[in-house]
Every structure is written in C-alpha cells, then in structure tokens.
Image 1 (spheres, rainbow, N blue to C red):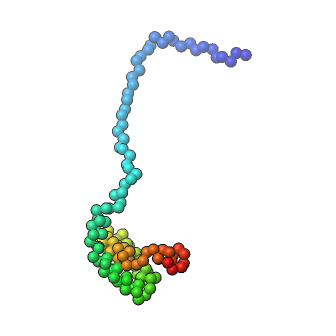
Image 2 (cartoon, rainbow, N blue to C red):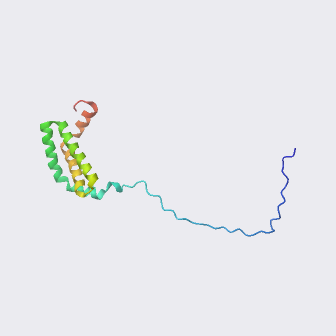
Image 3 (tube, rainbow, N blue to C red):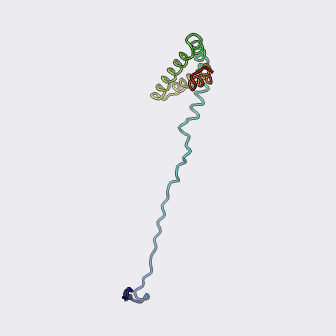
Length: 129
C-alpha cells in the first residue's frame, strides 16, 4: 500500500520561463471621521442666544416666582415646563435665532426662580426637603 502519488513530469524550470510582471494599485482612502464630533451643539449660536436671553429670563423668573407664591410649587413647575416644551417645539419647527433665545429664556427663568434641589428630593422620596 503505497499512498504516495507518482511524481508529476514537470518541464525543467528554465524552459519557457517568462518574467512575472507585478502591478501595484494604490488607492487613497479618506480618513475616518472623528467620533468626537460636537458640531451639533452649535456652541456659537447657543452662546449668543444665552447672552441675549439673560434680561428676559429675569422677567420670566419673576412671573414664575409669582406663580410659585400664589399657586404653589406644582403650578409653577407646570407653567415652566409648559412654556419650555412649547418653546422647544417652536424652535424645532422654525430653527431661528429668536426661537433658540426663547428656549434659553424659559430655561434660565425656570432655573433662576424655582428651587431645583427640594423639587428633586420631593420627586424621588415623596416627602418635602
């Protein structure tokens, strides 16, 4: 039982030998985009809107303080989130400088007028801070 196949009859290597041509194709690939792209923040636009909305935010904070005093904390938060939600929807549909400034005005007014920490404690525990 011989499992070795018979030797093939190849011609000698020097007979009919032609040089091999090698072609190299270089392709230029674009560099991979950075995963740390923060252009969606629009830092310049948001900074300008934030600076513009400082004065109207104090007026909005005064209105929310009045609601907090007369209607309670829940009424003030409801009014603040209602105005903020409307401003965000309006900004999403229009995407203008004025609408973004309105979003910042409602945000700054709510943060400036309403107590954040006691509200978070009341939401998480159910008891006043």
